[in-house]
Image 1 (cartoon, rainbow, N blue to C red):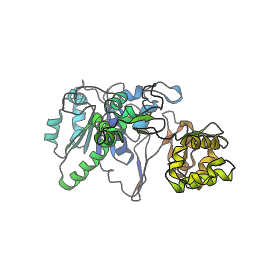
Image 2 (image 1 turned 90 degrees about the horizontal axis):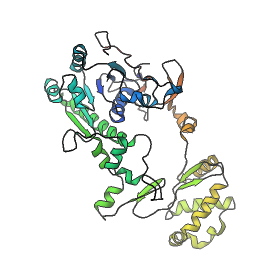
Image 3 (image 1 turned 135 degrees about the horizontal axis):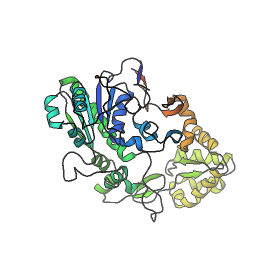
Image 4 (image 1 turned 135 degrees about the vertical axis):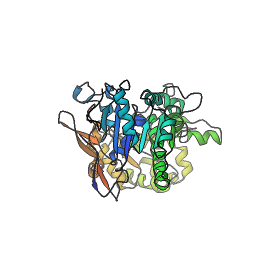
Length: 399
């Protein structure tokens, strides 16, 4: 258990002290990004812990505050301090920690208010403090007091309409990974870095007001420009971008029952010829070697026939062979890993992406590391904290 270790160089955030009052992936991920890069992040928790500690699944079936994989995913490298807002001593402790903090991440102003602290008063007393507020709908507006969830964020922001399958008798499908909350964290992270750059130049902090809803509403990919300009509505498609009109399927089953993703754009002559040569080498090109198929228009008219031959071509090969051979031939093709297969992915292994993270009982578990690397410095994330593991300066964790 412990903070991230700066192993090479000097991290630009390692001197920062960050106070985090967050219970959803939006705020917790924002704090994690700072903590994993070496900042000292103090995670304030109520008695019993934040909500994410009670969210499963749990490591080895241990249904307690220290074994939640949800909590582990978003809280590496942080300190955990339990403070009860009803305790005068705890309120004084939080005020003391904030008096020397560089950044405050807060999701619920009422939680902060329960400690006797309001944002305006805090910013007046600490004009150099960067406050990052990450709320469902922002600090102002008619929806400012509404609550949200990842599903609500995706639906209200419009993203959900693009998520699902070709069969539109099935409702839209919420994607995994808390992506609605992750969008809020992404916007918060970018805005926070800009605020820190300005603080370094001017010495002044500022309030960064992030709305998870607005982050989703402006991230609709093709849906927004299609509506703004030709007034067209995109339609969700299985494993490919939502478009106003259907595009060719890109998911193919292989002989071993696994799938690959192959984005064949019929108008790309080089890719077509590479695929044709590959199929011909295995005696599977059939009539696609007819010179007529060198014309884009003919390929498009015969799209259904081309698709059927490609499906059979992949069905006679295992996914590993298809993946490597397709890559060797310069084709945009990738293997779809099941969750449990990710730790065995050769690219992620070569990158050293997964870490061995200790559980409270000392056992080690694979854990995703940093999604980026820097030439100027390197850090190794620390394990998520046990509930109330870290004491405040007074030597107590107030529950």
